[in-house]
Length: 330
Length: 303
Image (cartoon, helix red, strand yellow):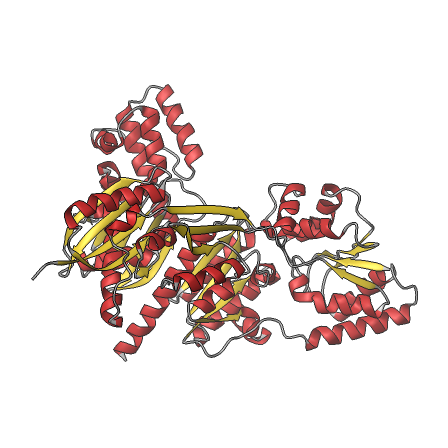
């Protein structure tokens, strides 16, 4: 029998990830692409890549997550559009059924998820500040002229990490520059930064909650060995990095799509890989009908209006909702 | 005489009293429209940067009203209960608006130190004197306004949903659909009913406060604490959603104090500010509702 697959898509602020999963929940292919501020183009590029291997195979379901999940869900015809917390938790549980704590640091979000008997028991997300997330690390690596891939390695070479204020990205940066000017080496400064970020993350999100093992660390920042070792040092516990740590959100979305369709018995809404050749246009406008001046997004495929959102009163989205027959959210 | 009533801050709780009082005195009441983007933009532009979002929005309402009325009712709120206080920003609000917004009509800004009868009647005479010189008429208007306020049921408790979330936080966050991005509608769409913390009796709130090592200085702080703890102990809701203004001092203390008392009971803080993106807001609400659903299913599965 031909193998059948599920597609999971995670459109985040920094990376867009795609996963092809088989019926046994094995990841057969994963893509980690930089979003570079162009979610639609990046997603299309990813789908084109996958079409090469899986173009002829049957796709039984598709799921979308990440901050761009609505847009992505619309583009691929997702069966499930879910928030990142649920997606990450489901993915972590299937990799490590006993997982109790998930540390997840992405491009602009960081979250901690506590599980008990396989279900999410509590979670916390960073509030309005993106200090200590991937995009800040990216920026610091660029400033020190070190490729981000090598950044963590520097931290491991440090013998004497300096102390850096991790509470705010602006303070951290001025602290780093100051330490640099007084003569500390890059290794010590980077190690200091990694420790500051790990400390800040735990102070902010874990806030005195008990962190029990097994602990999984996922998200793009888990690639940074410096941060990983800082977490191990502060928590004084081992931290597991799942094999597909960087695409766990997309993996979770694929699993959720499989579960959803198996429960409902419905056929998938997935548009197929050919949909990348559709003319997908996103237009934004400011509605002038009342003082709220909502920024409304219109999406059309091949010049047919398909979806619309962003309005508070619902008059634009209600009209578009009929045409698109609605995707399941929540 | 046209008296302007800004639809911001404590309007959410005391609008019935204020409207009745002014109308009984023979004034025409002009209320600013529900908060919208224009009002927010105006408020942000004229208010000082450090103020919290609800203060800025109040500025926007005052700005909308200033050319549409002969005077504005903006009491200087210092306290609502005896020997307790409310946020000090309220105390300085009159100075803020009168310095930040040019060409204001006269402000009826008599101070309110407590809603206790003896103290509030003094306020009524001072404030009412602006419209009506006859003290007996003021006293009559005051009594009618008090009765109307007592009849007013603040908040709601929705039935008929499989899950329920209690909203806790400042009334001007909970009841302003613009500030809170219509959180009630979002929760309803996820199949969750909403109750607001005012549904807890004052007596039950006070009983919880008694257990604190010291009586809270701030009236609202005590209310949020007492109501949250009572809701969690009695299981009146499946989870608590605390709507907090970014940079609010009272919220920063209360959210920690409540969490330390209610333990494992599902609790989430949503920070509201002018730059709060709706996407991040939705993600958190969705994840919280997913968590409640799974926890409930799991609970049923065990029992």
